[in-house]
Length: 385
Image (cartoon, rainbow, N blue to C red):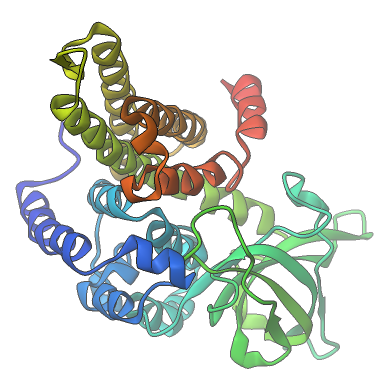
């Protein structure tokens, strides 16, 4: 059965055309990269399109898309500019996703409308200098105040997407909890933290290999007073919150990369159809045909995985973490292989900046590292699959 009704399909089509036109006519990937941030005209246009709150319920100011609809729009963004895709994804796929999944009605009402409008940007703060893949070893701490009305947050997070521009943070910290034995143990809890609370500072934007227009920065928390009502998902439930956020967002990575693959494959096919060597179009040579056919197959599988996963999520399949991990690993490695092969088909032109594929290669490299390294996710698949 289809994950979308006819009405939902029509509403998706109504969003696709303006979104596609915007990325073709307004967004300028090369200009964004040179600026190392998203151009103001592009940001304003993205807000007008409503893409900062694609999955926020309509009654809270969002577009209210299902996962399958969201996947299709993310594919359009990934086709045109992965830097913009990461900025938007860091905001809504992980930045405020915890509020959507675990927030109380009061938390949703307070934060989601301004996040959906793009008035404020969100970030997901988990990684620290001493804890990358080993998320349970974080050192950021949140101590309850004597009166119990707030927590005092101290710590440092690194490599945070949107870290320098966000006003709302989902932050993970160790909190003291009394267990059944009466002992006090440290457990991870999640908090909604506002920059306006005071004590929240960001480092300068990191200089990166790719996705340069996506802001990445350290975020420091120095005696930040976080109201007790900003605890997200329950005391000591932070690890569960973090893993659910990451699992829930991974289908979007496969969708975005399916779009990226589509875009570069078109470049290879167009070049092959117009390039003449040895008296014939290179598209007529078996070696080139084999490359393009294999790229097309990898794209088909990646796109299919993204839509099967998002459809299952829409149909309320409760356990999809294994499929989400597989899709992230496969998509990131397939996209890298495809971009590399496209450069090979284009030859010397593929190595030139003007072809636009070398930028795609640099943008793609991070996808095998962040939101769970492929190495760790392979171990997860082996242990649970």
